Length: 249
Length: 388
Image (cartoon, rainbow over the protein chains, first blue to last red):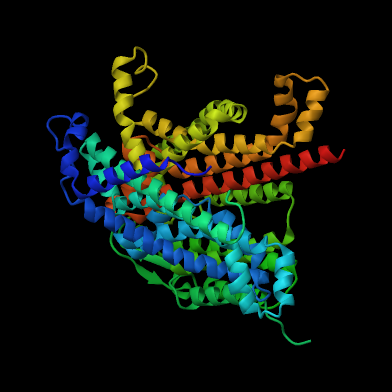
């Protein structure tokens, strides 16, 4: 699959999304039919813009931490020094993926209290797995003749890693990061059940006051963000793959 | 030959040593919502069993630390896990003042870290043994029976999470049934709709990109929003479609949760069906056509069996994901284990959160292992047939 949407449609949707986040008042007539009893049609307990930025910030912090740790671990277990950890890390990844995000979130609360922290922990742990798995796949399925050639050219282990192995597995690693970001964007909304400041607040406010307009606008913003970030990272992957002379999938 | 250390053992030993000597083993609280105070192993257990547990931990640390045979590591990890399970129950009985029904004893960080350390050891042994699918299922069964026996024996009855359970035994099983019905029911519905849709997408190329894109976009809608958005349409259906409300279709409750889980489940099923069918070797299809098979015979006799392991992988993703997502159904009155999680979060009663979270994790974990084993079995059966 190449991209979600054709370019022109994408530009229009992006403009609409940004306009909605910056000035939601313009769109009030669209959401009015979703409300009952004259309830407000646009979220009025805080600014959508700052919630969106906080949402993106939370996901970004958790994802960057996950990228560093996951790639570091993947490099470690694919070196001779860490080879002993390889079978275990594979099965841990499998086990970890069965942990539901809500459970991780709820279990983190007793340890660190309410607010941003449990959300960051849940997003970090949940983001680790796809990146680690893909980095492992990338690093362990490199064509052996290229790795041999690098060694033959007299590269040190460090040069081999930085100049050959990591660049070659970059497209696969980026695919893992993309997966992890999209999961993270949706999962962050659940963080609002433990008082994190994310767009989930809008959705939960709608669920509590039975206001469908809130639920829909919160959901649409998150989904819109996810689609555009997905598309952007996909484009990045294609660039990386082209530079490596591989064909994008 | 000098002493050789096991690298993973060093990590396990460090965690276990910290947990046993520096972290509290159990938490004592005067009632269910006040903050607790930690008790170390020697304070939390009676005079004989405390030092005995510490001795066992030290022995297991040595086994983990050195390069020891797998059998010894297996025995050490299993013995320690059983000992910890019994010890935390004993701590519950020992720390509860006689006749006091308000005091709550719960496992503290030291206990969880010890469990983590020795589960790591066990997981490493099991991964290195490369067990066959049947043996893995047997191990799972033994573990499940052991946990069931411990629960039935009443060893853990003095622990806070089981006190929460005793207070809610009826609703616990009702919510459990709802949770499983939601997760499994939506999976069945997704397979019934998704398989034909996947086959259609495979045959009709014009449909493929469109259908997969729509399903992809559904996946990006956050679960709580999708659950909420369905309240409106289903409420309308309940009001305006005759017979719908008799079927239990309502704006809030199980119906929107079921539909949301169903929508999320469609992508993995359809996408994996398409990928699986696309991966069927051309030669197999040509041969089938050459033998004079009709399209229908070819689908059921050749393509479908060959694509089956890939389709099963999609079903595994859906089941594990649905078990987790079904917790969110509680937010819109759909029931399930999420009821306890969100009630607990609301009351800051962590035992209640655990009562909802632990069964959810266990259920997802078991579902993952069982389906992994089935996938491996079908894949190897397929390979054997291909060779024969």
